[in-house]
Length: 323
Length: 126
Image 1: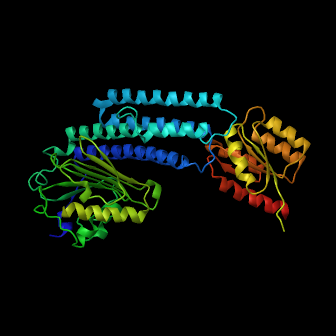
Image 2: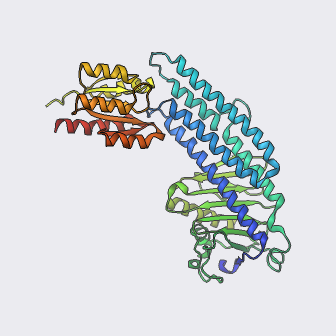
Image 3: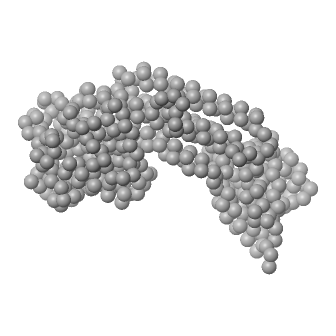
């Protein structure tokens, strides 16, 4: 069966679909803030290699920017998972306190700054401390900013799973509920993803990431057949020209992929969540950062060149549908 | 023909900058003096002009812009390179309009500064 026959465009008439789109856009906002945080980590690590002339101002700006971005991420998380708000803000306060301690250390190091040129300067020492706080080996379990970010993902995805807007009976009346198969229901995130109500070829899809995701499947290099996998999975693909948000409807097979594929490398990313029933090794290409949790695995690849993102999407699409 | 040694002045109130730049720039055979404030740097400049002045923009008492103005008033051939933090691009623009040779944003690699110094040196010798 041709993949195009499995694609069903869902109209925006139902308020639940609109809520789903709003929720998806907000989740992507959270990921964009997370991506900005990861960029800050990467910048700090690059500067820590010792090749740069940097001063205390760089390190204190790094701390400031992390605290600010983390605050934006918490805000997004609280919109998506308000029941976790208090807990998340309490943890955020602990990170702000840690940031404050690092600031004070930075002032102390300035006062103590000796005239001798030691092999490790106070600025680099402080930067190393900051990086330890961001994503290093923690002195206490789950005390890094990265641990906290992963915790935020867990809170948010658990909450979305519980609410499960799209489970509403009325939503896909006569559609999904009757024939779960391996259909992919397409939702326009920004009213620009699908050129025509009936898709005749991949060219009718104006979503770069979705087009690449389906490319190998479309050309017959993998077949989306529910009999191939253990479970019949129904997919929802919310798409716009540069974005794809793909998730499953079944609560016992949870997979979520968020991707941005554009010409602007800095905005490109792929984020994946897979529950324990899914072996991500069989799905994800090399080069992904993977975090394991009790809830499932989170994986991401950021700042990749357009070609890399496109290749990765093709591979994930093929692996997912032939798994 | 042996290249002429440059006399370079580095001014930054974060002493790490001078400490790290001095040995790097001296590797090229240039003469480097470092200062942690504009007052002592300008006093030294009064005694003897330098070919190149590398100065941070944000400093107490005398900031980088004032250093730039006073250095150029004393020696118009001196090339002044401004070091700027992330948030001071506007000020860096002002510095360029007031005659700074170039500016470099912190954090930076010493090699990037050396490239600017090389260009400045070529102009000095032109």
